[in-house]
Length: 198
Image (cartoon, rainbow, N blue to C red; front, side, top):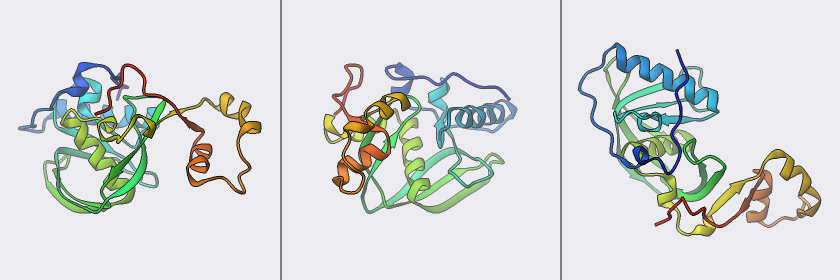
């Protein structure tokens, strides 16, 4: 397998809708396995084909604790239920995370790498990853779900975080917002010029 370059904003491919896969062959499977290696190497939970320059409806996911990566072809979110506010990042938007709203659970359908139909209910991180990656295939980034610029946070480097430790509040009594930012090594910043928030 080989590692693929991950496209980053503002690359136009990230805003294009991927095409439906009509058949599964060796070329598609090689792409899928290369995507798994690329995702794992980058420390990601999911990756969509258009993030590596391929406009095909193909995603890969591996949530922490799962030995096998999931490969889904022509994935769809069939139903959504509930809302929850979560912090989310993206390999195509390095250095930033955002507070957005995702579903509590989703009903998901796709074809697996053997072209078998799969349908299931997903919750928590898996539901979040499925929504995130299917969004990618439709040219949607998590940034599009931000309610305001203030919901975007910049991830500090480890060195910067260590240098600012003396300036942060004691961990005993932080506000919820400050505490969450401190634990993730992040701070709130203005939106970069290249990132548009609707």
